[in-house]
Length: 198
Image (cartoon, rainbow, N blue to C red; front, side, top):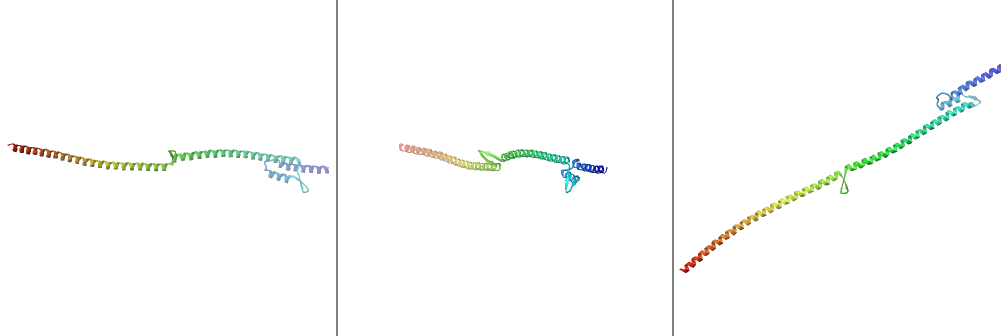
C-alpha cells in the first residue's frame, strides 16, 4: 500500500502539473505570457524543464496560429497600403491634371492673344491705351491743323474777294473815267470841228 500511495502521489502531482501546464494553452494570453506560464508550470528534472509533448505541440500550434494571424494581418495591411498608394497615386495624378487645368485657366484669364502674340491683359490694355491716346492726339493735331488751314484759306479768300472787289471797283472807275474822258475828248473834237467849220 505504501507503493500505491507513492504512485498516487506521483500521479496526482503529475496530474496537477499537467493541469498547470495546460493553463498555458487555455485562455487569451499573449505569447510571452503563455511561454512564461509554460516555463513556470512545467516540471523540473535537474536543471532541465520537462514539458509534455502534447502541451508543447499545443503551444507550437498556438504560436503558428499567432504567426499566421500576424502574417495575415501584415498581408492585409500591405494590401491596404498598396490600395492606399494606388489611391494616392490616382489622386496625385488627378490633382496634377487639375493644377495644370487651373494654370491654363489662370493663364488664359490673365493673357490675351492678338495676331498670334500673347500679351498679359495689363500690357495689352496699356498698349491699346497708348495707341488710342496717340490716335486721339493725332486727330486733335490734324483737326487743329485743318482749322488753321481753313482759317488761312478763309483769310486768303477774304483777301482775294477784297482785292477782287477793289479791282472791280478800280476797273469800273477806270472805265467810267475812260468813258468820261472819251466823251470829253469827243466833245472837244466836236467843238474843234465846229470851230473850224464855222
